[in-house]
Length: 610
Image (cartoon, rainbow, N blue to C red):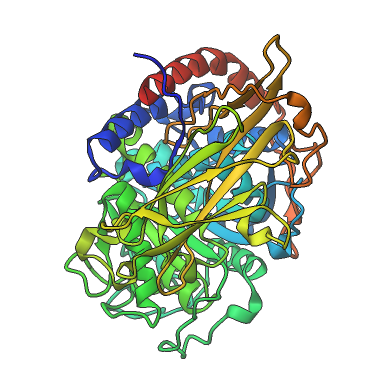
């Protein structure tokens, strides 16, 4: 079978389990490629019996190695201390490293961006809150690696990192995590604060950090005042240094003007807020969002319901949501409610997989391949989450050759206002239909200025909920040879814009006996779990002298320069120095694993596209 001659970008939306047969086949291919993603966990220490999960030491070294190898994209800051370190305590019950642990935050963003930190969207992901939940830190780290691997390779990831900062606190609870990894029989959940639990057994002390936030703190319907209980809320709100580290970081990261008084529980945030908070847990297969302290809807429920359903489109998780039959139980003083109810940002959580000590086969085959695209989707809307989530989504973006004489291209887009919110009973935000799709050449829609190249697409098939748009673009002489980016954004009939999708393509001029123009799409090696664009050729008999050889006036994407930090850390946060002597482990691991894996992955991707 011959390779496809189209430049075809299926967005992550195509990988819903409930998509058509073509989508299901692509999903299967994506899973195979995901299994080959060279995260090189084998090059680092892993948890005994769980080779897919790096242990605490291996993960910490992975983080610093990643930042050392890609300083233009990743930076690490020391944001606080664990209980044992902050209290200078020694735990005699378990064999623990002396001195406790630092708590680190990693910032993934492009330092070569023309956008300053203050103008970028912000997303904060935390994991490792409950010590025994093995999968969340690995998923968070793989997301960071996916972003770094995809920069300047995948069009969506490239613009995302130029417009967004993605912050990750991989281990909120490193003390507890060390116990959970080395004493798995204890099923350790909390931190290691003995909290005057004199009557507690040695394996039941500690504070549940996800009941310690200062929102609905102390509600006994969703937390416990008993120091021996797994859901003990602590002596007071934000009593624990781990909680304080997260809160202080969030306060520095998210806009102060968006903060709310917790008493204003019925006041909506509105559609102009910036920022998303994500709390990754395990297990059960849920997407949850406020309110969590009680089964009642928040004032921004329409936006949060749309967000929950669109995330569930990727992973097919149930909605642990207010008003839902899958609202399992209340959780008072949790991070998701606090970040929405006090920090004033969009907020949700994930409950991954089926077990605290997740099976590696399930993690590799289902958890990672379906949740990484969900995180990517959330990050794409982080600049205006409550507005963009209500808009239509680009389901398919395809470029095919146009006229051989003109060197033009034909663009086809499938957009939908309803597809991603159909599951779990649908949502009112998906009833408006798609009014139009706008294309932009070499300029992101948020950066558009008068004179930049843009085209409006109208539907050619609008008798369905997922209309198809087509447009023939004849490039003017000012389009230079080299790589270009085509952006697409849809609008519904209520004038809500949806997330941006994009694709790279190359315009090349070949000096041959019969002068030709070659239009090719750059294949993506980034593990974004969607097939990359396959090569295509457009042959033209046009005189190449008619084509401009001057650089395009539109922004071009070039490899990022090497700098020390990708943007400024939040206020009062000091960049961390690596506690590890070997700063080349990630580089060595990558060099050892990438060549063979990349070849196999490329072959599989090509097979998926034919």
